[in-house]
Image 1 (tube, rainbow, N blue to C red):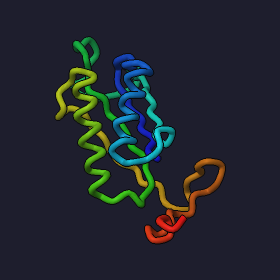
Image 2 (cartoon, one colour):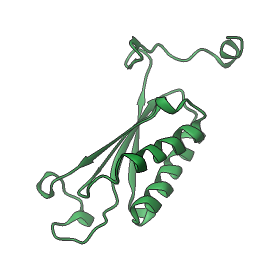
Image 3 (cartoon, rainbow, N blue to C red):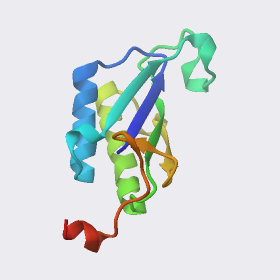
Image 4 (cartoon, rainbow, N blue to C red):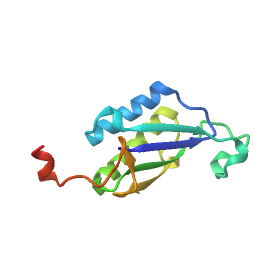
Length: 131
């Protein structure tokens, strides 16, 4: 259930590129394709401060972003997701991988509305296997 918000002074790479990125994410996490959303926010020069984004600097500019996901994702999966996003964004946008900045926000049970209901946590693996 990751929701990925990317911000940059550059225009969006477009819906097809974002869809390919979402597909890479859902493939890595082994979740249905419709369980990943990507949002691109183009920032005006006066709306942000980042040294690499100085007004008049030539693009492309590496984005910064937030990845919101359930707290139940194991740390290794989240680390893999961050690396995948870094590499895919670097290639897609032709930006240095070390300039892509991402932070994870964890959604906790009782504080996430998903598919019409408040998420109360995932069932234990044994319960999921039997359903």
